[in-house]
Image (tube, rainbow over all chains, first blue to last red; front, side):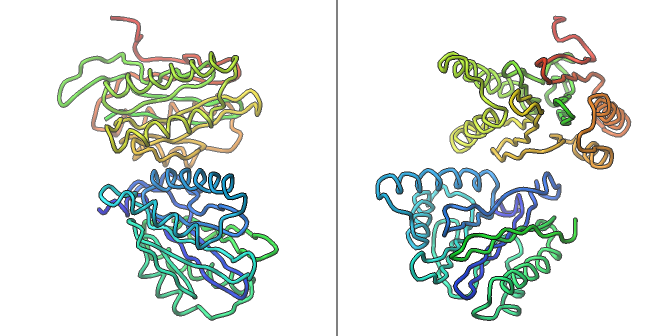
Length: 205
Length: 201
């Protein structure tokens, strides 16, 4: 089994009208066995940036700590908040620094530009090769399922409530056919007015 | 081959581990204490090679003691201790990993509750209401899934522990005759029972 599939994960980030959403499953497994059903894989970095870290659980937690540290340093030095573009680039650089001994994480970044309220989406592989898209990004052990669901259900310029529904349905349908992900979900919808977080209950298997 | 499991109950945590010290086909010892005390109100059940068990637990326990000495008696919360362990394991992972799978349990005065943390050898940390490490998982987790209720009492938690040990004795291939059971609550870490006295040489 691949190291990236050891713990299991599924996540999507999607753009809407002046809003962005990010969703992930809740399973922490050790190969076939489920250890926990409330493992956090999506982290709020600041009011405008959320990052989804999918892959080896230890590196998910290590990378989250490193990113929190680096954001804190940035804010102390620059006396301003990090923008999603800068965050994404920082993450890419961090990962490539470990090019020949990488963190086994394939992250997705969802953010909102503070001034224009335009959505920002990016994803990268475990050595930091970035991709920026306008519609959606996915990561995890069932990317095939996720891409299919997103391509089918996505419509541009969805309002926050419609975006939530789309994300929830795309995630739940995808993880139901993957043994390594699922056991619930969490969806964060980010708008200029704040973040709304909702828990999903799907098939508990 | 080690069996380690733990359950959180109202007002504390119970940790249990088998007492066999074995490698390959040879059993060196059957009164080993694998539930190592870390601080006054925390302990961890450890699964893995004896060398890493001893070295890692002593390193963590002494560092926790040093923190208290250096910080005017301030005790670290169970969550802080678990995250400290996680960090040490994560740093060692890509240098010279400690091959220990842990269940860290502790009692916090401030919240007046116990908490249990699952920590595997790769430094994946998760707070859990009950958990197990090793082959025991295949036998015990389902029992705990069925019988655990939030806010259950110490005696109910011990019943689940007994039930799990019985199941392992019945169905697990490896013979593990002795189990060390420790309870962590407001009064600290105490031995509830053991199969064989670790103090006997």
